[in-house]
Structure formats: structure tokens, C-alpha cells
Length: 130
Image 1: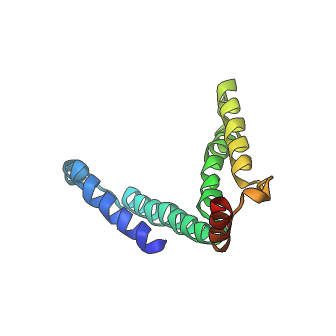
Image 2: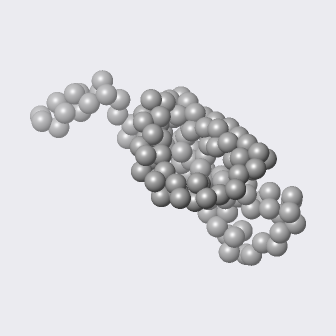
Image 3: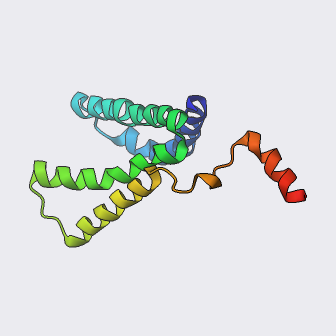
């Protein structure tokens, strides 16, 4: 999974980098913002992609991607706790929907008879033909 993510990131850089070249060249860079941006990109984004790829390999893509549903509620909670932001009821409702979606994606399947393993697919095909 990691080589696929690496290739996707290379394509993304090649497609989007030309859009910002003029701004990067004309910007006045100081060390603090430059290194902050570098660390945020390397550790924030890089670690997130590696973690997602690792989780997808261990628990499957659907369950691993359900972690993305936790970002809005966590950001809302941090905004309230750290910055003292006021939160609209619509934001709270959206967070509840996100948490419910994450829970639905991660819960065990209720009907195991719908789960067909690859080794059973030929047996199912034989039953359907007869």
C-alpha cells in the first residue's frame, strides 16, 4: 500500500506544484514558518498517510478509512477546549453524524451469512447452477 501512496503523492505534487510556483518564488521566507511548514507536511501528513496505509493492511480499507470521520468532532472539541470557540448547534449535529458514521463502519456485521470467503465462491456458484 505504501508504494501506491508514494506514487499518488508524486502525481499530486507534479499536478499541483505548477499552480503555486509564482507564489513560492515571490514569498519572503523566514526560517520559522518554513520549518513549521516542513515539519507539518512531513510529520502531520506523512505520518497520517503511513498510519492509514498500515491500518488498511491490518483491518481493511473500509474500517481504516472510518478514522477520517473522527476528524471533525475532534477538531470541534479542540476548538472549544483550547481556543474557547463558540459552537453552533449545526456543528454539534454534524459531529454526531460523523461519530455515528464511524461507528456504523466499524461495527461487526450483523449477518455473517452474507460474508462469502473466496474459497466458498465456487461452492456458491455450483449451488446456483444446480
